[in-house]
Length: 328
Image 1 (cartoon, rainbow, N blue to C red):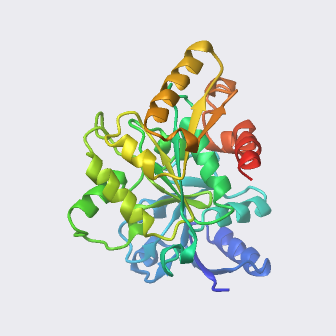
Image 2 (image 1 turned 60 degrees about the vertical axis):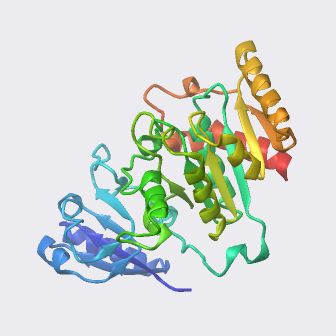
């Protein structure tokens, strides 16, 4: 198995050396390079799949000649944050430290031919009543389905909280990729992965920014996106749909399955039934799978609207049991 190239950069030379020694002794599949001086870090060369950068180095990350595919903020202060970067705490248990490294490794996007004869699953998630857990549900489902094969989440929500939930600032988003496709593939990149983020084992296309930005994308551009992604090596693509999407019926017609998310309450149930009736008129009701989410964001602790709490709590268990159990 090819080793993963890992870079560690921090001013604490004793810590860096101790961490490198631990990783080597643990026989994990990493080829490790360390820096303890910013000037040498800036002069460095090479490509690294994962980089752990201390505060002084993360401020210079865009100035080094090295290509750093994915960056984590390495800190000894558990309360400290770096905008757009996931924190990895220096002094946590080392088994947890290594597991966090592995969760953040991008698996190569395979391109051996469109799914090698396998049928790609396209699953649309939609909530007629705008359930507050639609996005966390989609993220949880993406993580679980990624255990079965290469998975992509396309976030089409307007004013999405995906960057906030992941505590990351995307460098490129869905709008950038749509523009790239509509311009005939012109730009400073020709690789789909340059537009994708990676989180907990699955890829994602970050949402558009701005009020009405989703509504301004016309149906032909959405179908162009759908057609392009159908050629990529994803076993599953999850489309988190918004009511503002033009050409929604055309997209739903192409998908393998439509997941309608609801919750208890007469108003919500009536809304879901009305939408189901509309799908029936389009002949799409046979591919619908309704899911009644019994929980809401209110079940979380105060200030606890974070992905780790959701994915590892009731929501993740619910998705695995109710959806995968019935689908399997």
